Length: 458
Image 1 (cartoon, rainbow, N blue to C red):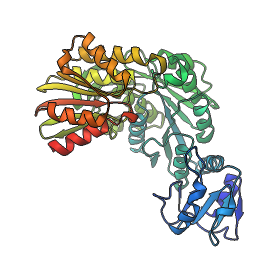
Image 2: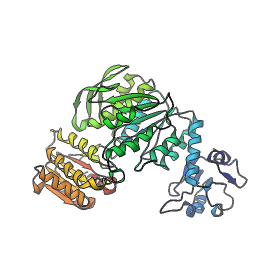
Image 3: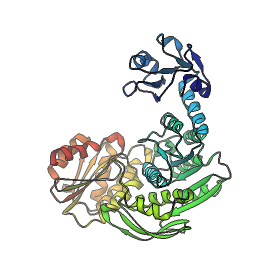
Image 4: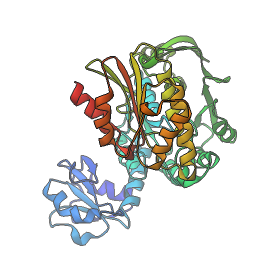
Protein backbone atom coordinates (compact mmCIF):
# COMPACT_ATOMS: atom_id res chain seq x y z
CA UNK A 1 0.00 0.00 0.00
CA UNK A 2 1.09 3.59 -0.52
CA UNK A 3 1.18 6.14 2.26
CA UNK A 4 -1.61 8.03 0.52
CA UNK A 5 -3.83 4.92 0.38
CA UNK A 6 -3.18 4.25 4.07
CA UNK A 7 -4.05 7.83 5.01
CA UNK A 8 -7.32 7.74 3.08
CA UNK A 9 -8.33 4.37 4.56
CA UNK A 10 -7.38 5.40 8.12
CA UNK A 11 -9.00 8.82 7.95
CA UNK A 12 -5.67 10.62 8.40
CA UNK A 13 -3.57 13.23 6.66
CA UNK A 14 -0.19 12.76 4.97
CA UNK A 15 2.62 14.84 6.44
CA UNK A 16 5.25 15.44 3.76
CA UNK A 17 5.15 15.08 0.01
CA UNK A 18 5.80 11.35 -0.31
CA UNK A 19 2.22 10.14 -0.78
CA UNK A 20 3.38 7.47 -3.23
CA UNK A 21 5.94 5.93 -0.86
CA UNK A 22 5.29 2.19 -0.62
CA UNK A 23 4.69 0.33 2.63
CA UNK A 24 5.31 -3.43 2.67
CA UNK A 25 4.24 -4.27 6.23
CA UNK A 26 3.01 -2.92 9.55
CA UNK A 27 4.59 -2.85 13.02
CA UNK A 28 3.92 -1.46 16.49
CA UNK A 29 7.25 -2.67 17.93
CA UNK A 30 10.65 -1.42 16.79
CA UNK A 31 12.23 -4.64 18.07
CA UNK A 32 10.50 -6.63 15.33
CA UNK A 33 10.10 -3.89 12.72
CA UNK A 34 11.32 -4.77 9.23
CA UNK A 35 12.64 -2.30 6.64
CA UNK A 36 9.70 -1.04 4.58
CA UNK A 37 7.16 -1.30 7.42
CA UNK A 38 4.78 1.40 8.54
CA UNK A 39 5.43 2.00 12.25
CA UNK A 40 2.28 2.81 14.24
CA UNK A 41 3.02 4.86 17.36
CA UNK A 42 0.52 3.36 19.80
CA UNK A 43 -0.05 5.09 23.13
CA UNK A 44 -0.69 2.57 25.91
CA UNK A 45 -0.76 2.48 29.69
CA UNK A 46 2.97 1.74 30.00
CA UNK A 47 4.53 2.88 26.74
CA UNK A 48 4.08 5.64 24.21
CA UNK A 49 5.13 4.58 20.73
CA UNK A 50 5.95 8.16 19.83
CA UNK A 51 9.12 7.79 21.89
CA UNK A 52 10.32 5.17 19.37
CA UNK A 53 9.47 6.97 16.11
CA UNK A 54 13.06 8.09 15.53
CA UNK A 55 14.32 4.55 16.18
CA UNK A 56 11.77 3.20 13.71
CA UNK A 57 13.10 5.59 11.10
CA UNK A 58 16.68 4.47 11.79
CA UNK A 59 15.64 0.84 11.35
CA UNK A 60 14.23 1.51 7.90
CA UNK A 61 10.54 2.20 8.45
CA UNK A 62 8.99 3.38 5.19
CA UNK A 63 6.54 5.63 7.06
CA UNK A 64 4.99 6.21 10.45
CA UNK A 65 1.49 6.76 11.79
CA UNK A 66 1.39 9.27 14.65
CA UNK A 67 -0.81 11.55 16.69
CA UNK A 68 1.97 14.07 17.33
CA UNK A 69 3.74 14.89 14.04
CA UNK A 70 6.43 16.91 15.84
CA UNK A 71 8.30 13.68 16.69
CA UNK A 72 8.68 12.64 13.04
CA UNK A 73 12.27 12.99 11.75
CA UNK A 74 12.80 14.88 8.50
CA UNK A 75 12.58 12.84 5.34
CA UNK A 76 10.19 10.10 6.47
CA UNK A 77 6.54 10.31 5.41
CA UNK A 78 3.92 10.26 8.15
CA UNK A 79 0.20 9.70 8.48
CA UNK A 80 -1.26 11.96 11.18
CA UNK A 81 -4.44 10.74 12.92
CA UNK A 82 -6.40 11.75 16.00
CA UNK A 83 -5.76 8.36 17.62
CA UNK A 84 -3.41 5.68 16.30
CA UNK A 85 -5.42 2.74 17.69
CA UNK A 86 -8.57 4.05 15.99
CA UNK A 87 -6.54 4.73 12.86
CA UNK A 88 -5.25 1.15 12.86
CA UNK A 89 -8.74 -0.26 13.36
CA UNK A 90 -10.28 1.92 10.65
CA UNK A 91 -7.49 1.00 8.24
CA UNK A 92 -7.95 -2.71 9.00
CA UNK A 93 -11.69 -2.56 8.39
CA UNK A 94 -11.18 -0.87 5.02
CA UNK A 95 -8.54 -3.44 4.02
CA UNK A 96 -10.92 -6.21 5.08
CA UNK A 97 -13.73 -4.74 2.95
CA UNK A 98 -11.58 -4.22 -0.14
CA UNK A 99 -9.86 -7.61 0.07
CA UNK A 100 -12.79 -9.64 -1.23
CA UNK A 101 -11.98 -12.31 1.36
CA UNK A 102 -14.53 -14.13 3.46
CA UNK A 103 -13.81 -13.83 7.17
CA UNK A 104 -14.37 -16.53 9.79
CA UNK A 105 -14.21 -15.31 13.42
CA UNK A 106 -13.89 -17.68 16.38
CA UNK A 107 -14.66 -16.95 20.02
CA UNK A 108 -15.30 -18.96 23.19
CA UNK A 109 -14.01 -19.48 26.70
CA UNK A 110 -11.69 -22.28 25.63
CA UNK A 111 -10.40 -23.76 22.40
CA UNK A 112 -10.34 -20.57 20.30
CA UNK A 113 -6.82 -20.97 18.97
CA UNK A 114 -7.15 -24.68 18.30
CA UNK A 115 -10.49 -24.19 16.54
CA UNK A 116 -8.98 -21.38 14.47
CA UNK A 117 -6.06 -23.58 13.41
CA UNK A 118 -8.27 -26.60 12.68
CA UNK A 119 -10.70 -24.50 10.65
CA UNK A 120 -7.92 -22.89 8.64
CA UNK A 121 -6.36 -26.29 7.94
CA UNK A 122 -9.64 -27.74 6.69
CA UNK A 123 -10.41 -24.72 4.50
CA UNK A 124 -6.90 -24.88 3.01
CA UNK A 125 -7.95 -28.06 1.23
CA UNK A 126 -9.75 -25.83 -1.26
CA UNK A 127 -8.85 -22.18 -0.62
CA UNK A 128 -5.98 -19.79 -0.03
CA UNK A 129 -6.30 -19.14 3.70
CA UNK A 130 -4.88 -16.57 6.08
CA UNK A 131 -5.00 -17.17 9.84
CA UNK A 132 -3.93 -14.73 12.54
CA UNK A 133 -0.73 -15.72 14.28
CA UNK A 134 -0.68 -16.82 17.90
CA UNK A 135 -3.27 -15.03 20.01
CA UNK A 136 -3.37 -11.69 18.16
CA UNK A 137 -7.04 -11.42 19.07
CA UNK A 138 -7.54 -8.08 20.84
CA UNK A 139 -8.24 -4.49 19.79
CA UNK A 140 -4.72 -4.13 18.43
CA UNK A 141 -3.76 -7.68 17.47
CA UNK A 142 -6.90 -8.36 15.43
CA UNK A 143 -6.61 -5.29 13.16
CA UNK A 144 -2.88 -5.96 12.67
CA UNK A 145 -3.88 -9.45 11.53
CA UNK A 146 -6.62 -8.21 9.23
CA UNK A 147 -4.13 -5.97 7.43
CA UNK A 148 -2.69 -9.18 5.97
CA UNK A 149 -5.88 -9.52 3.93
CA UNK A 150 -4.34 -6.97 1.54
CA UNK A 151 -2.59 -10.00 0.01
CA UNK A 152 -6.03 -11.19 -1.20
CA UNK A 153 -6.50 -14.65 0.33
CA UNK A 154 -9.85 -16.35 -0.28
CA UNK A 155 -10.60 -16.72 3.43
CA UNK A 156 -9.26 -15.20 6.65
CA UNK A 157 -9.70 -17.11 9.91
CA UNK A 158 -9.24 -15.07 13.08
CA UNK A 159 -10.00 -15.41 16.78
CA UNK A 160 -11.67 -12.82 18.98
CA UNK A 161 -10.66 -12.53 22.63
CA UNK A 162 -12.11 -10.51 25.48
CA UNK A 163 -12.26 -10.02 29.24
CA UNK A 164 -14.73 -7.12 29.43
CA UNK A 165 -18.10 -6.21 27.98
CA UNK A 166 -18.01 -4.48 24.62
CA UNK A 167 -14.69 -5.93 23.47
CA UNK A 168 -16.11 -8.63 21.19
CA UNK A 169 -18.61 -6.09 19.86
CA UNK A 170 -15.78 -3.74 18.87
CA UNK A 171 -13.83 -6.56 17.20
CA UNK A 172 -16.88 -7.71 15.22
CA UNK A 173 -17.30 -4.18 13.87
CA UNK A 174 -13.72 -4.31 12.59
CA UNK A 175 -13.72 -7.87 11.22
CA UNK A 176 -17.30 -7.93 9.87
CA UNK A 177 -17.23 -11.75 9.81
CA UNK A 178 -19.22 -13.80 7.31
CA UNK A 179 -19.01 -16.83 9.64
CA UNK A 180 -19.00 -16.65 13.43
CA UNK A 181 -17.92 -19.68 15.48
CA UNK A 182 -18.85 -19.88 19.19
CA UNK A 183 -17.07 -22.81 20.83
CA UNK A 184 -18.37 -22.68 24.42
CA UNK A 185 -18.92 -20.69 27.61
CA UNK A 186 -16.91 -21.52 30.72
CA UNK A 187 -15.67 -20.11 34.02
CA UNK A 188 -13.04 -17.83 32.51
CA UNK A 189 -12.63 -14.13 33.42
CA UNK A 190 -15.08 -14.47 36.32
CA UNK A 191 -13.09 -11.76 38.10
CA UNK A 192 -14.57 -9.30 35.60
CA UNK A 193 -18.01 -10.83 35.00
CA UNK A 194 -19.02 -12.62 38.21
CA UNK A 195 -21.04 -15.45 36.62
CA UNK A 196 -20.86 -17.70 33.57
CA UNK A 197 -24.19 -16.23 32.41
CA UNK A 198 -22.50 -12.84 32.30
CA UNK A 199 -19.58 -14.34 30.36
CA UNK A 200 -22.12 -15.69 27.88
CA UNK A 201 -23.68 -12.24 27.49
CA UNK A 202 -20.28 -10.81 26.58
CA UNK A 203 -19.42 -13.65 24.20
CA UNK A 204 -22.84 -13.27 22.55
CA UNK A 205 -21.58 -10.02 21.07
CA UNK A 206 -20.11 -12.27 18.34
CA UNK A 207 -23.64 -12.34 16.87
CA UNK A 208 -23.98 -8.57 16.49
CA UNK A 209 -24.39 -6.90 13.11
CA UNK A 210 -25.15 -10.14 11.29
CA UNK A 211 -26.69 -10.13 7.83
CA UNK A 212 -29.28 -12.77 6.78
CA UNK A 213 -26.65 -14.68 4.79
CA UNK A 214 -24.13 -14.80 7.67
CA UNK A 215 -23.57 -18.07 9.48
CA UNK A 216 -23.24 -18.86 13.19
CA UNK A 217 -21.56 -22.17 14.04
CA UNK A 218 -22.74 -22.97 17.57
CA UNK A 219 -22.01 -25.67 20.16
CA UNK A 220 -25.20 -27.69 20.64
CA UNK A 221 -23.82 -29.16 23.88
CA UNK A 222 -23.56 -25.76 25.57
CA UNK A 223 -26.88 -24.49 26.97
CA UNK A 224 -25.68 -20.90 27.24
CA UNK A 225 -24.45 -20.81 23.66
CA UNK A 226 -27.69 -22.26 22.32
CA UNK A 227 -29.86 -19.93 24.38
CA UNK A 228 -28.23 -16.96 22.68
CA UNK A 229 -27.98 -18.64 19.27
CA UNK A 230 -31.77 -18.80 19.13
CA UNK A 231 -31.88 -15.06 18.43
CA UNK A 232 -29.16 -14.95 15.75
CA UNK A 233 -30.43 -13.02 12.74
CA UNK A 234 -28.58 -15.14 10.17
CA UNK A 235 -28.22 -18.89 9.59
CA UNK A 236 -27.20 -21.35 12.33
CA UNK A 237 -25.30 -24.64 12.07
CA UNK A 238 -24.73 -26.69 15.22
CA UNK A 239 -22.03 -29.15 16.24
CA UNK A 240 -21.89 -31.46 19.22
CA UNK A 241 -20.89 -34.64 20.97
CA UNK A 242 -23.76 -35.33 23.37
CA UNK A 243 -26.86 -33.85 21.75
CA UNK A 244 -28.47 -33.86 18.30
CA UNK A 245 -26.58 -31.47 16.03
CA UNK A 246 -26.00 -30.78 12.35
CA UNK A 247 -22.39 -31.97 12.73
CA UNK A 248 -22.20 -34.69 15.38
CA UNK A 249 -19.65 -37.24 16.58
CA UNK A 250 -20.85 -40.71 17.55
CA UNK A 251 -19.06 -43.97 18.41
CA UNK A 252 -16.42 -41.88 20.16
CA UNK A 253 -13.27 -43.64 21.34
CA UNK A 254 -10.39 -41.98 23.18
CA UNK A 255 -6.87 -42.91 22.12
CA UNK A 256 -5.48 -41.16 25.20
CA UNK A 257 -2.71 -38.70 24.39
CA UNK A 258 -2.62 -40.19 20.87
CA UNK A 259 -5.92 -38.53 19.95
CA UNK A 260 -9.55 -39.42 19.28
CA UNK A 261 -11.54 -41.66 16.95
CA UNK A 262 -15.20 -41.14 16.06
CA UNK A 263 -17.87 -41.45 13.42
CA UNK A 264 -18.91 -38.01 12.20
CA UNK A 265 -22.49 -37.49 11.02
CA UNK A 266 -23.08 -34.51 8.71
CA UNK A 267 -25.60 -33.33 6.10
CA UNK A 268 -22.91 -34.26 3.55
CA UNK A 269 -22.77 -37.85 4.79
CA UNK A 270 -21.02 -39.88 7.46
CA UNK A 271 -17.35 -40.73 7.81
CA UNK A 272 -14.90 -42.31 10.22
CA UNK A 273 -12.52 -39.68 11.57
CA UNK A 274 -9.27 -40.01 13.48
CA UNK A 275 -7.39 -37.02 14.87
CA UNK A 276 -4.14 -36.86 16.86
CA UNK A 277 -5.65 -34.07 18.97
CA UNK A 278 -6.42 -35.64 22.38
CA UNK A 279 -9.60 -35.32 24.41
CA UNK A 280 -13.28 -34.58 24.00
CA UNK A 281 -12.69 -30.83 23.96
CA UNK A 282 -10.43 -31.13 20.94
CA UNK A 283 -12.91 -33.42 19.21
CA UNK A 284 -15.51 -30.69 19.71
CA UNK A 285 -13.08 -28.19 18.17
CA UNK A 286 -12.64 -30.49 15.17
CA UNK A 287 -16.42 -30.66 14.73
CA UNK A 288 -16.62 -26.86 14.75
CA UNK A 289 -13.96 -26.71 12.05
CA UNK A 290 -15.81 -29.38 10.09
CA UNK A 291 -19.00 -27.32 10.20
CA UNK A 292 -17.20 -24.31 8.73
CA UNK A 293 -15.43 -26.37 6.07
CA UNK A 294 -18.66 -27.99 4.88
CA UNK A 295 -20.32 -24.55 4.75
CA UNK A 296 -17.54 -23.58 2.30
CA UNK A 297 -18.16 -26.77 0.26
CA UNK A 298 -14.96 -28.51 1.29
CA UNK A 299 -15.59 -32.25 0.71
CA UNK A 300 -16.02 -34.34 3.84
CA UNK A 301 -13.32 -36.68 2.53
CA UNK A 302 -10.85 -33.78 2.53
CA UNK A 303 -11.82 -32.89 6.10
CA UNK A 304 -11.20 -36.46 7.24
CA UNK A 305 -7.84 -36.58 5.45
CA UNK A 306 -6.67 -33.33 7.01
CA UNK A 307 -8.01 -34.21 10.47
CA UNK A 308 -5.60 -37.15 10.53
CA UNK A 309 -2.65 -34.79 10.09
CA UNK A 310 -3.59 -32.16 12.69
CA UNK A 311 -1.11 -31.28 15.42
CA UNK A 312 -1.77 -29.44 18.69
CA UNK A 313 -0.97 -25.74 18.78
CA UNK A 314 2.25 -25.10 20.74
CA UNK A 315 1.64 -25.12 24.52
CA UNK A 316 -2.01 -26.13 24.00
CA UNK A 317 -2.00 -29.87 24.53
CA UNK A 318 1.26 -30.47 22.69
CA UNK A 319 2.58 -33.99 23.31
CA UNK A 320 6.35 -34.10 23.82
CA UNK A 321 8.39 -37.29 24.17
CA UNK A 322 11.85 -36.90 25.62
CA UNK A 323 14.16 -39.29 27.52
CA UNK A 324 11.45 -41.89 28.13
CA UNK A 325 9.09 -39.20 29.47
CA UNK A 326 5.82 -38.14 27.83
CA UNK A 327 4.82 -34.53 28.56
CA UNK A 328 1.45 -33.02 27.72
CA UNK A 329 2.34 -29.33 27.44
CA UNK A 330 -0.93 -27.47 28.01
CA UNK A 331 0.81 -24.57 29.73
CA UNK A 332 -0.54 -21.72 27.61
CA UNK A 333 -3.66 -21.08 29.68
CA UNK A 334 -6.25 -22.67 31.94
CA UNK A 335 -9.72 -22.44 33.42
CA UNK A 336 -11.72 -25.00 35.43
CA UNK A 337 -13.54 -26.51 32.45
CA UNK A 338 -10.41 -26.76 30.31
CA UNK A 339 -8.53 -28.32 33.23
CA UNK A 340 -11.30 -30.86 33.74
CA UNK A 341 -11.03 -31.90 30.08
CA UNK A 342 -7.24 -32.24 30.34
CA UNK A 343 -7.52 -34.37 33.49
CA UNK A 344 -10.04 -36.61 31.74
CA UNK A 345 -7.47 -37.38 29.04
CA UNK A 346 -4.87 -38.26 31.67
CA UNK A 347 -7.32 -40.37 33.66
CA UNK A 348 -8.05 -42.57 30.63
CA UNK A 349 -4.37 -43.35 30.01
CA UNK A 350 -3.17 -46.76 31.20
CA UNK A 351 -0.03 -47.19 29.08
CA UNK A 352 2.35 -45.28 31.35
CA UNK A 353 4.20 -46.28 34.50
CA UNK A 354 2.78 -43.32 36.42
CA UNK A 355 0.70 -40.21 35.76
CA UNK A 356 1.79 -36.90 37.28
CA UNK A 357 0.49 -33.34 36.95
CA UNK A 358 1.88 -29.86 37.43
CA UNK A 359 -1.12 -27.55 37.76
CA UNK A 360 -0.71 -23.80 37.85
CA UNK A 361 -3.17 -21.42 39.47
CA UNK A 362 -6.13 -20.40 37.30
CA UNK A 363 -6.27 -16.61 37.22
CA UNK A 364 -9.16 -14.15 36.82
CA UNK A 365 -11.71 -16.29 38.69
CA UNK A 366 -12.66 -13.59 41.20
CA UNK A 367 -14.46 -14.49 44.41
CA UNK A 368 -15.15 -18.03 43.17
CA UNK A 369 -11.45 -18.76 42.82
CA UNK A 370 -10.94 -20.67 46.08
CA UNK A 371 -13.99 -22.91 45.65
CA UNK A 372 -13.22 -23.61 42.00
CA UNK A 373 -9.61 -24.52 42.74
CA UNK A 374 -10.67 -26.80 45.60
CA UNK A 375 -13.22 -28.58 43.40
CA UNK A 376 -10.64 -28.93 40.63
CA UNK A 377 -8.23 -30.44 43.13
CA UNK A 378 -10.78 -33.12 43.95
CA UNK A 379 -11.07 -33.88 40.23
CA UNK A 380 -7.30 -34.18 40.03
CA UNK A 381 -7.32 -36.74 42.84
CA UNK A 382 -9.98 -38.75 41.04
CA UNK A 383 -7.88 -38.92 37.86
CA UNK A 384 -5.44 -41.39 39.41
CA UNK A 385 -2.36 -39.20 39.67
CA UNK A 386 0.73 -40.61 41.33
CA UNK A 387 1.88 -37.09 42.21
CA UNK A 388 0.63 -33.55 41.95
CA UNK A 389 2.45 -30.21 42.09
CA UNK A 390 0.23 -27.15 42.53
CA UNK A 391 1.82 -23.81 41.61
CA UNK A 392 0.86 -20.24 42.49
CA UNK A 393 -0.62 -18.24 45.33
CA UNK A 394 -3.34 -19.18 47.84
CA UNK A 395 -5.77 -20.62 45.25
CA UNK A 396 -3.08 -23.11 44.18
CA UNK A 397 -2.67 -24.12 47.82
CA UNK A 398 -6.42 -24.74 47.93
CA UNK A 399 -6.11 -26.84 44.80
CA UNK A 400 -3.58 -29.01 46.62
CA UNK A 401 -5.86 -29.19 49.67
CA UNK A 402 -8.79 -30.21 47.46
CA UNK A 403 -6.72 -33.05 46.04
CA UNK A 404 -5.98 -34.29 49.56
CA UNK A 405 -9.68 -34.03 50.41
CA UNK A 406 -10.33 -36.12 47.29
CA UNK A 407 -8.15 -38.94 48.60
CA UNK A 408 -4.64 -38.14 47.39
CA UNK A 409 -1.89 -38.88 49.86
CA UNK A 410 -0.49 -35.65 51.40
CA UNK A 411 3.04 -36.84 50.67
CA UNK A 412 2.22 -36.98 46.96
CA UNK A 413 0.35 -33.65 46.81
CA UNK A 414 2.85 -30.79 46.70
CA UNK A 415 2.48 -27.01 46.71
CA UNK A 416 5.06 -24.43 45.59
CA UNK A 417 4.65 -20.68 44.99
CA UNK A 418 6.52 -20.39 41.66
CA UNK A 419 7.02 -22.35 38.47
CA UNK A 420 10.77 -22.18 38.95
CA UNK A 421 10.38 -24.05 42.24
CA UNK A 422 7.97 -26.44 40.52
CA UNK A 423 10.55 -27.15 37.84
CA UNK A 424 13.17 -27.92 40.50
CA UNK A 425 10.79 -30.26 42.32
CA UNK A 426 9.38 -32.07 39.29
CA UNK A 427 12.86 -32.77 37.94
CA UNK A 428 13.43 -34.89 41.06
CA UNK A 429 10.06 -36.67 40.85
CA UNK A 430 9.83 -37.90 37.26
CA UNK A 431 11.03 -41.26 35.99
CA UNK A 432 11.24 -42.80 32.52
CA UNK A 433 7.85 -44.16 31.54
CA UNK A 434 5.91 -41.35 33.27
CA UNK A 435 3.18 -39.21 31.74
CA UNK A 436 3.29 -35.60 32.96
CA UNK A 437 0.49 -33.08 32.41
CA UNK A 438 1.57 -29.43 32.71
CA UNK A 439 -1.23 -26.84 32.73
CA UNK A 440 -1.83 -23.37 34.16
CA UNK A 441 -2.79 -19.80 33.44
CA UNK A 442 -0.29 -17.93 31.32
CA UNK A 443 0.70 -15.60 34.14
CA UNK A 444 1.93 -18.53 36.26
CA UNK A 445 4.48 -19.56 33.59
CA UNK A 446 4.19 -23.32 33.94
CA UNK A 447 5.88 -23.45 30.53
CA UNK A 448 9.11 -23.10 32.53
CA UNK A 449 8.47 -26.58 33.91
CA UNK A 450 8.20 -28.03 30.42
CA UNK A 451 11.34 -26.28 29.25
CA UNK A 452 13.29 -27.49 32.28
CA UNK A 453 12.23 -31.11 31.73
CA UNK A 454 13.11 -30.95 28.06
CA UNK A 455 16.53 -29.49 28.83
CA UNK A 456 17.46 -31.86 31.65
CA UNK A 457 15.97 -35.12 30.45
CA UNK A 458 16.50 -34.60 26.74
